[in-house]
Picture 1 (cartoon, rainbow, N blue to C red):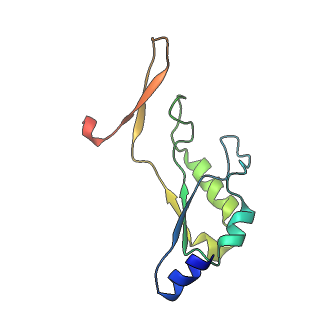
Picture 2 (picture 1 turned 135 degrees about the vertical axis):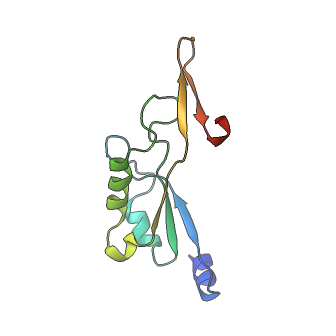
Picture 3 (picture 1 turned 45 degrees about the vertical axis):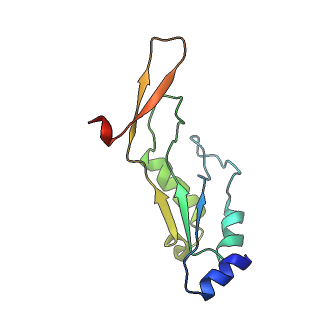
Length: 114
């Protein structure tokens, strides 16, 4: 809290990166909650919500479905003013899943692959 107040007085921006509040079933994970954001909002300039790796790197499926991103934002944005201070981290990559081996693995597909 003290650091945020000092930075604000110095006209600096403090961005806190936070994990998604909801899991794939849209249940609260407990890792970062509405209570956390309500306590911190007067000390933090912006919150950067990590809405990528929905499935994790080991499971096939969507990386960041739009409904999940939106529900995480809705869950944490307890007011319109707070909603304007939520940034969403959106992935710009995909995963390729290798099958046929004894161990499942995936690797990121990035721009350098093309």
